[in-house]
Length: 189
Image (cartoon, rainbow, N blue to C red; front, side):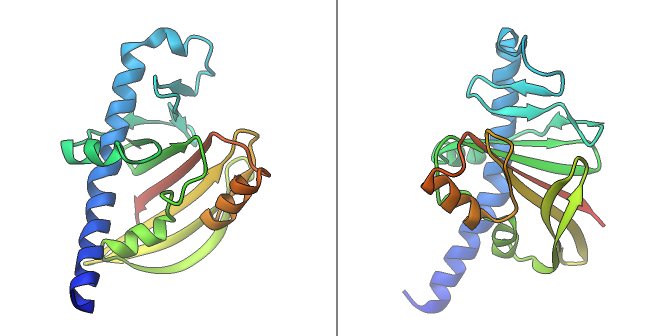
């Protein structure tokens, strides 16, 4: 297979993963939470816990979140992901919540995913938001569409990571304890 063929296959795979798989897990997680509401009785008011153990925010920065529908292809892909994936929206932005129970190389930086589906990435920076939450943010641009994308990973003790590589090594060495939750938000500029 030539260099061009490998590059084409990689781009198609990244586009499929980002555009199809992520929304599927959100719908599945919400459906699980709604089927068994007794599991959520002792949870904080701003979280829903799914049967798979993922905690999904009901509110984000004061805005109510609702799930987005997932397709069949996304559900199939999520079966291989070593955790849960959910997709939510507040009407202005889309949030992808990935929860993992163990260290994995399948938890990729959002910038890599956006590049893989054809976006140009620029203006990458660390930004403090809300309750002193540090996030890695960037602008993703494709075909005249501009998105502000921010992400961070939080461990069970509340330790925050803005870099997946730093998170991975902290999780492997035991200085960060799971489950871990990677939250990525994207909104139009």
